[in-house]
Image (cartoon, rainbow, N blue to C red; front, side, top):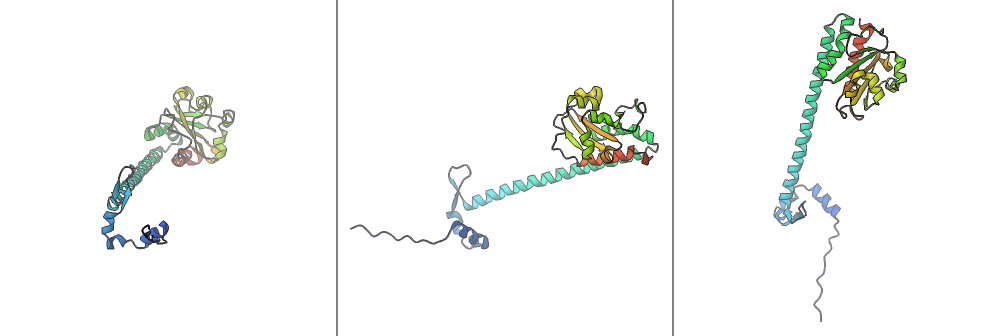
Length: 234
């Protein structure tokens, strides 16, 4: 005669109900501290197991590292924002120091290159006479219809800055003899729908002005440039 089978007691508890109970009773292991050393969970590496206390310490350490990385990102972003704000302030101050409108306009490209450490700057002005600024590097009197021919009118119609890699023909139109060194471009209309002209920034780095790059700061710069270019600021 075989020995009687030991009855199996079923608690009826699901993993979800156990988890819910522990969440509702966070002091459970304080009242049952001995269980902390008896329970174990698999190690991330898959080899062996660690006690619940060790696992909890490991999770807390990882969480602290994630929080530290997030904090470092916030600090870095804050410093970058402060630096950009300082550069904007410097640009405005330098332009205000030029009471003569023509002098202010002539100083724009150089100020932009120096303050923002730009590789290439070009201001295409729609209402300027062809020979007005021929002697100023970075300034160009450009008929608005020429942009239509070069396929750049979308930037004006969108009334918003745009970054990316433009065609060789477009880069040559924008930057002339420097086009061969320009790998990525940022464009911003000056005034509503580019009423006054177009600001073009070029970089030797092909990924510097990528399509996903935020254009908020570029919009602020173009607003300042537009105010300096506008005849109403004279």
